[in-house]
Length: 113
Image 1 (spheres, one colour):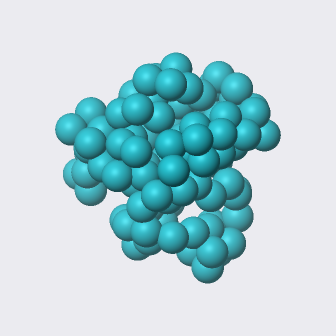
Image 2 (tube, rainbow, N blue to C red):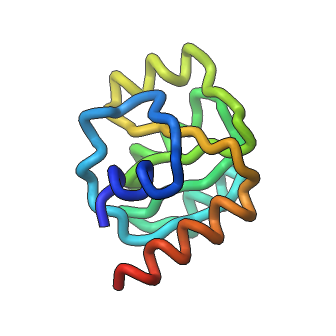
């Protein structure tokens, strides 16, 4: 499944990385503790978080994540968007809470297998 399909199916708003929407999505990881995401996410995952600061971009690059979904309608800071563009990281926003976003993502990915 491509990140573009996730964005369209979950009605997400793309904030950066429009040119990265053809990334393959292999799964998802939800968490707000950066060290947990570093330790447990896998390359190709979409990361679900409420964090909006610039350090989320560094984690996404380090772990080779397909993208970041920021939940609850929170918006990334301008500094975060600037860094995401520099590092070519897709950041998308969901108005839904993390629990709902994760459930919908799981159903979407599991159903495509």
